[in-house]
Image (cartoon, rainbow, N blue to C red; front, side):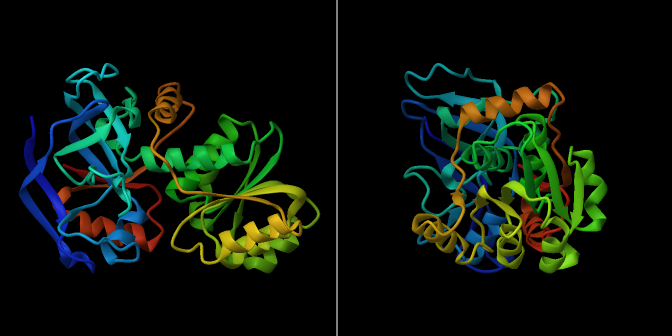
Length: 329
């Protein structure tokens, strides 16, 4: 049976003025392998603002945006056996981009239809609200690091270490893969990055030339990059010849993926992989295990009601939130 509830939609591409809170958002009955989550919370990711603004343009309106969701199972489709009604869960939906899997909408909504394979039982160590901040950033960091096939003891340089994805990159690199971690952030966030497990923190304000000078004689095995631009280009000069660049696609990627992919294919550059995160319930199972064992922490910067998502977008696009912005549904 379909279900109707509230949702925050965008009515066009633009600024925060395109948000509209509605109470008649209908979600269809779950099909085989699908479940409906009655949402407790979602969270704001930079990609949400890109979609709202039109940088990643949607072709249809009104549109519900957002990819992260936490809550309780409301209904299960025929043949779905992984979860029961009432289970506390969290998930990443493909709906965080306009080219989402057909039939699925965003997570800024009271009821969210997802594939059960995208869902995991929520960690008991976090509130459901805080758990909503985990899926996209954790899965992005995990998938990006796995691409690099890291070996215990290798050195990794994390560009953007104090950002939401970078925070998980630092922790996974240290706690799961056993790497020596150098985090790149502002001096303001150095203590935060160290607390997450970084062996050392380098201040990005020293600039590309400072990065080259500091590490030219002690190079890295892996670059974990969520920034792109000049700092990535500088970092590549302090990467070992057999090293790996693992880049997370973002608005600042520019031509980096094309340039570094071509250089690798031509035999003139380093191994390179670009990650665009994919939903994964099994990946979130790992997150739950790590969170509940105390090996992973999730930082929440601010909690807002759904109607104030625009404020959350402003904070996240500024780039210095220091943690996730949570939206309470």
